[in-house]
Length: 137
Image (cartoon, rainbow, N blue to C red):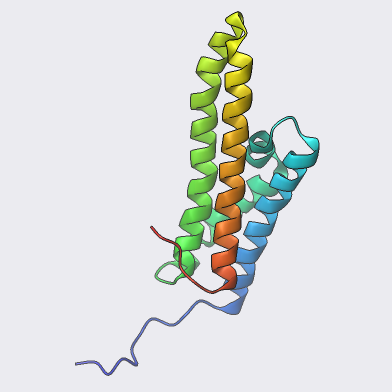
């Protein structure tokens, strides 16, 4: 029988700060992509801030296991890998259809939507982190 005092302790403040740093690195890539790169999503996937963020995610993942921060790490990692997967899925038919010029519009619209999706995911995650809330699985 337990009295509720044997709950798993929360994450350390340094892990919370690390999670903020990861969101900030992703946000920097998205901001650079919005104002200076050919595509938002291209900058998100291939710029050094996002790549560093994903590496930190994998290095620190065991430290956040069984805490509410685990959902944030999963959210960040999935955002990166799903963005990469969907950019490939969009690019292949777009490049094939570029022979008939339709592919340019398909690629542009697809990458724009994917960029907006990435901005949404990073913003939603960071807002939940500020509120110290877990994200859905």
